[in-house]
Length: 190
Image 1 (tube, rainbow, N blue to C red):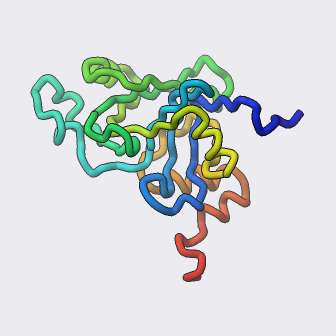
Image 2: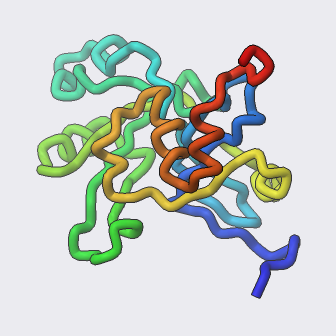
């Protein structure tokens, strides 16, 4: 049964891969982890593949945060870029479905990030800013096909969270998406 255009969309925990038509600005070739999503509250996510070139040590030089100093900082989105936040990723190996194994905790404190770095199999990332949508905004963008939603597989943690993540993930969706991933930025220059 097809969903009607007004059916609620539930995407929490999924990835949003920017459609190639989003050529301008921060969302160009972005991969967003949608951490929160509800029709009434809007959505909250973090761009996974926009490293800033900085590390936590560049931003927090206190000795108490030295364990985190090597962690790369990513630009999570256009909102609240003056804030640094941490996210922990891990695999739930008790779940037999690889598309349901990735777990994460967002907006964790620096102290929690330190604790989680000591847990085997946990990847901690740091972000400045976040991506946010008001009520109905993301749903409207999805109806205009600005984003390609997909479930994250357990191997997401094995990927480098850099610009090329967009193409790597897009190629794995379908042959059509592989063509999109390999197309030049300016298709008229080909």
